[in-house]
Image (tube, rainbow, N blue to C red; front, side, top):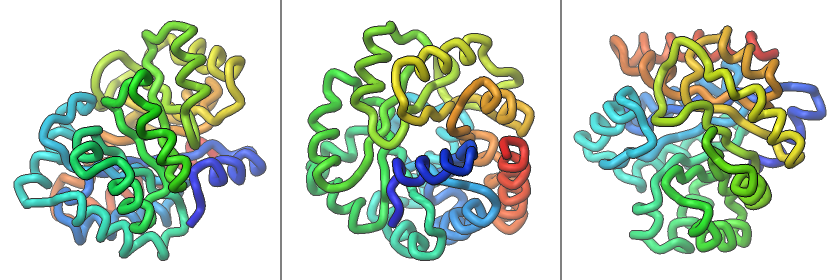
Length: 264
């Protein structure tokens, strides 16, 4: 199982920008999630973010909130999500990053949770509601167990906070492109280019940009601004949810391929 940092090292050696698609586990169903992971991996994904359905997803916009609600209504739980990871991880050979809120981690016990996801084949974690001031409680045991916890930097962060988050983040740094929640947007925020330049002068860790990238043109623009990874969520979740599961899978495969082409 390749870890996140190693995947970025390999991509950097080949002068490649990473594509990180996001899907919500269990939407429209768990079987489709398993197929989606393979299809994304076969159509240009370099890493995949897999969202654990949660009842109070504060960082998510309406598209991903709706996907999580549908999955929860079908009874999808963490154990179901990890069973899917375990099923496909040997087939796709790219890191899977679990996107989860902190409450499910706390509820199960931090070390117990980390060992459970590690055993399933998860390589990394993104926990959007975990503030820097409380992150050490997760970062330290995660490093010992071998799970990379990626921290988020908001566009409103102060320079001192940017430096502190960059120093602590594992695997890569997640730069949020807009103030607010996830979702499709028609144009990228104008300050991202400056934020990327600032971050690159602060750290040599890879930087992924997410929240709002919804088409190949935007992906290409953000790559040209200096991003090491393009993270696309709502635009993929929306396509997967439309029509039948088969048509949704076909749509995300084609879309993923077009995104990768744009940043290659």
